[in-house]
Length: 300
Ligand SMILES: Cc1cc2nc3c(=O)[nH]c(=O)nc-3n(C[C@H](O)[C@H](O)[C@H](O)COP(=O)(O)OP(=O)(O)OC[C@H]3O[C@@H](n4cnc5c(N)ncnc54)[C@H](O)[C@@H]3O)c2cc1C
Ligand code: FES
Image (cartoon, rainbow, N blue to C red; front, top):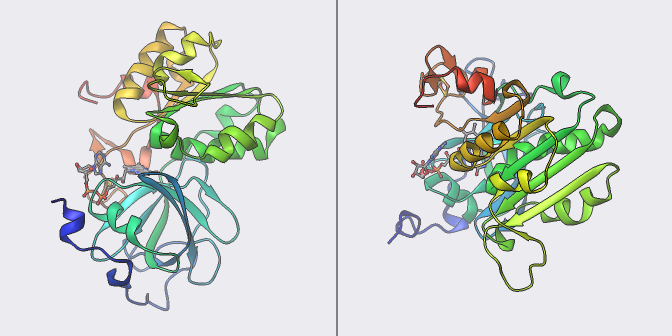
């Protein structure tokens, strides 16, 4: 029997976290101790796929808990299940969104809560995507599965500031139609955007699916996409093969941007959990160019 059932998770049984220190900052974590989260409320839960839900999180004062740049992250906690890093996929004045896949203790517990659940939230963390570098250029977004979560914030930014960027191309795939996240954007919102192409693929044929079938890494080559700035996010194996394919297609290593998922604890460069040599993924990343990754020790 899995851990989740052993814990007999029931939304009513999920503990409410204690009230936060009244002197805490309302724009991020406590100024006295940056590891202490501020109080958040999960105001909306949207089911994306059988194992991914989007959580909209509002600060205790009714505004968004912090203001991230595209590609930045937040630490979300739910005592006693723990705390973990998640990408912010979208934001507005009242909340930030995180799309979370149920994989373990914390994430399964989050999938069992109901709207109104209190949580802890701190951030923003990480370097985010290089907006200045992307400015004015054609951008190709390549994502697989839950890897759509980090890249979505940048796609939304480009759509909102449409004239600041060239052609936008999205190549996204998942195991099946049911596993595609953010279907509204993929099939309804983004196809209407000027000079923006959306290419969706699933791994295997299935009844009712009229679109492309095949793995994400080989799809850009099938589409004969011309080399330009590309942003690649997804499971490590997908990133590995996608980077190899882009290299073969003539994409320049300093124009291929990706995100690295290392296990993290503090998120602020203190615990040493995520360092690679002198580089701290939580501070210097998680966004790196292929050129930067190539210069890292071979095991990464
Ligand atoms: C920079 C960054 C951004 C992330 N963004 C997202 C996101 O937007 N959405 C999302 O769903 N998840 C994201 N993650 C992954 C998320 O943090 C983990 O899934 C989470 O820590 C799992 O916590 P848990 O307590 O549920 O799992 P645990 O019970 O701790 O672990 C369950 C299983 O998952 C493995 N695991 C846990 N975390 C990681 C990890 N970081 N890398 C590899 N394996 C891991 C464990 O080894 C174990 O096998 C991100 C991680 C990082 C570092
Ligand atoms: S997560 Fe602690 S140093 Fe990066």
